[in-house]
Amino acid sequence: MFIKIKKNCGIYMEHNGMEKNHIMPVTSNFLINLGHAAEISFYTIKETKTRYDLENHQITVPPHTRVIHLQMAYRYSSTKEQIGDSKGSIVERNFYKFYFKPEEMGQYEELRMHIEKHVLNL
Image: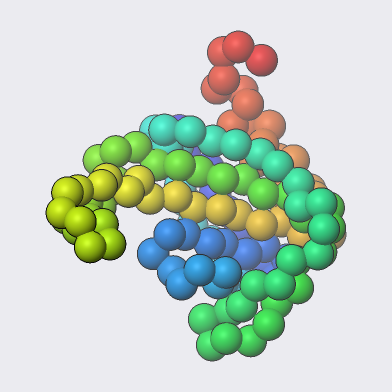
């Protein structure tokens, strides 16, 4: 199943390939194949958070911002061969977080409804 994220100035994305505490605005439409997601969670930001765009401009994420967190399957992961000073390996799965500011609840609710239609135990 694919979902479409529509470009909008009130929606931001984060993924683990970016620097910590950085998000970027969704500036074009794109599709996500939910068949590649291992876990999906929904939550709401309870307090104001500060994030940064790719040019280190401050972005304020207000309370009541909704988040869809997609943890991808293991085949979409990377392996680190060294952890700190010790040898070994760790598999790090890719994730994507989509932040929907309060004024974007319509698109958030639409996407959540489409995702929940494919969950069997609700």
